[in-house]
Image (cartoon, rainbow, N blue to C red; front, top):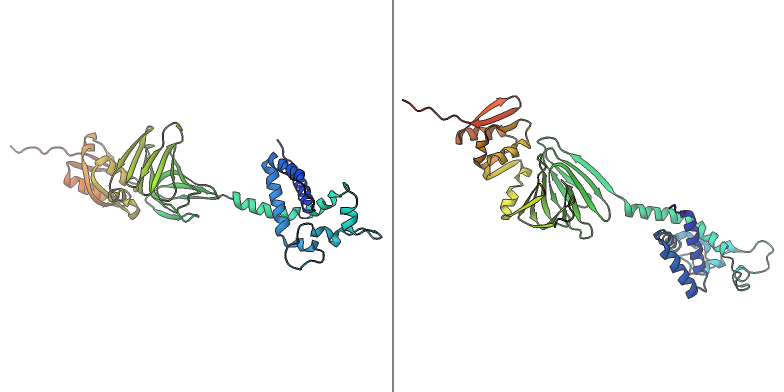
Amino acid sequence: MNIDHRQIERTASMWLARRDAGGWSDRQQTALDAWLAESTAHRVAFLRLEAAWEETARLKAFAAGGSATGVPARGEWVHSPYFASPAGGDHPVGQRRIMHGRGRRRWPLFAGVAASLLAIAVVAGGIAWSHYTRVETGAWRTALGARQVVQLPDGSTATLGSDTGLRMAFSRSRRDLDLASGEAFFDVAHDVARPFVVQVEGYRVTAVGTRFDVRRGHDSKLRVVVTRGLVRLQSTSDPAQAATMLPAGSIAMVGGGDVLVQQVPLDEARERLSWRDGYAVFHGTPLAEAVGEFNRYNARKIVIADPSLDALRVGGNFRLDNSAAFVRLMQEVFPVQAAQHGNRIVLSRKAPAKSAR
């Protein structure tokens, strides 16, 4: 349905002129209320024009003998010389056009005055509406092995990990982000009226004021780590699935529609996010998981050729950009041997030493 905004503005100006002229009755107010209730467009047009009517300094020109400052009282501007009768007229405008004979008020004249303010109302209202509905957007991308701290317009920060893509769309009512790939840690500014929402892998991660990390794996698995506040994890692909509330110290692993939540001490949860300082911290971590951590930050990938090595558990602190040191340690501590194959480091089980005869 097409909306005639010009006609709506003209009708709104007519209502405003009638109300300002005085003698406003309950019946007229009821009719105005009914018109306003017909649509949001009616209410927006009327309120916008009313604001311009009352606040613009140009209304001073319609005052008749009033103070040079301030907005004239309702009804005062109808005595302005701008409404004087034509040359030779024998009645003051206040009598001839307003008071002379009931039912003969010339509302089109008042509507003309209101229409003269219409351009101001449209501009002022347009600016206000534009400000209200304005959406701030942004997009960032980090290279492999890189990290970046992004200052968001609401005062929050996002720390992006290696090979990460993040998009933002913030408005007065929403703070929406889309984690297209990689990992990001969010330190969220408190704003109850605008929930902070990260869309990732068919899930919505929602917070108000908190700190949490979201990782999107190459295997379509999702990890959420919360270090402060409370986060709500909700499936967008399956709305019937109950939301999962994650307090500080929670580590949620999502895969195949299943959500597995582990509650750990805060220090341990923070250690999972040591990538922000360029380190990986392992405590009895499966070898495959440790290898995956290095592969997120290095072009030369580590490949486990022998599945039996997956049972090995790794401990220690390692620089993420020094996978060679990690491989050397694996060879010294475990029955592992490494071989270079192009851009890959292949780990296999070391053959048992032959016994001497």
